[in-house]
Image 1: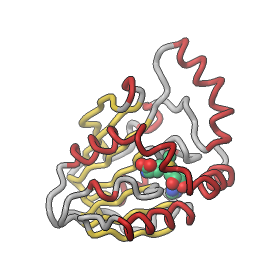
Image 2: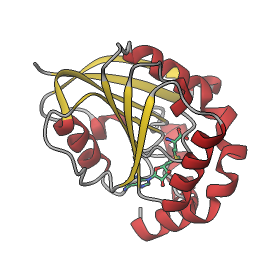
Image 3: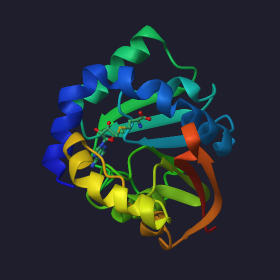
Image 4: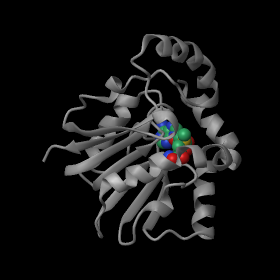
Length: 206
Ligand SMILES: C[S@@+](CC[C@H](N)C(=O)[O-])C[C@H]1O[C@@H](n2cnc3c(N)ncnc32)[C@H](O)[C@@H]1O
């Protein structure tokens, strides 16, 4: 995955992103926020916040920082906040998920919805998420991951050069983001249509 291509794609299509990706990804977003079991006063980092489709799902009393590499996507998120102010307190910033500009152990929950297959080095992103999550906190990922079934893998491998042009890959195995030091997988379940996406919740060792 080429960073310039990915960024160019989201910069160009920010205006129509919600039309294409709101409904289809929404059940996974809802389940992810439920799995966070957020309490008032907790701090959440949302990595790849995009147009802010998750922002109104966070409960009141929670403080959320949303970061994204694409300014046009962030502009859409700002506009959404203006139209429908979220219950949670939200701050947005432009930032690369491959190098998060926060000190270690800053957030209670670090969440990446539909992001690990659009970055060139997914494991590095999850390692960064783990670093900024406090001990005892949670790292939450929702994404499609490559199938373990041979015939499906065959299709995913062949389609990925095409989907890469539109900003994501289909063939990333879940194993690519497992085993990050400090993280223990606590939950894994299938979400969205036909269970083609997965919600994965990690705990950070206390
Ligand atoms: C498929 S969209 C997901 C948006 C949103 N999370 C959602 O639930 O719809 C992927 C997002 O990741 C962002 N992104 C891609 N590469 C990134 C990077 N290196 N750092 C931060 N954000 C990145 C894109 O700009 C885009 O907004």
